[in-house]
Image 1 (tube, rainbow, N blue to C red):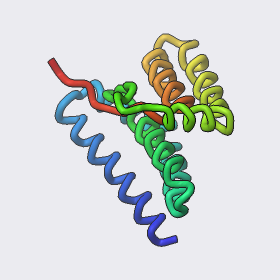
Image 2 (cartoon, one colour):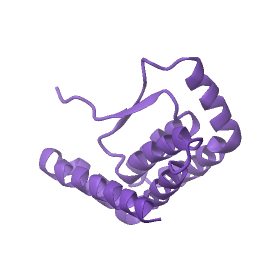
Image 3 (cartoon, rainbow, N blue to C red):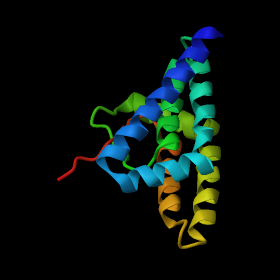
Image 4 (spheres, helix red, strand yellow):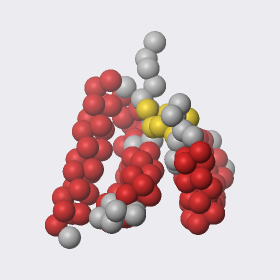
Length: 152
């Protein structure tokens, strides 16, 4: 139980470090991530906890890694992009089908409902766009990469 708690604390500190670096590089991103985290992004801690718990078993490590990836996007989504990984193959496709059938569709529908609710107001449109990003990674997490876009 102690290793799980330490892993969750590490992931929270990693998210906090990302938030501080965002303040220095892009104040708009910082404001968006801060509002997101305060108003509901803290639910990413649940993703981190479930991912850490699944990583305790050998069989659950692939799913645990994907849930931690979802938690990373759910914690601080502003300034992140979800892109297809060039190394995805047959196993990623099989993992995505299994994921989507078992529980990916539930997370997809939850973020779809949140996106529609946020888009109902003009102020919530940026948050709705982040939920759309989460919809993609929740439905097919295998074979996608969460990256910081390059500044030009």
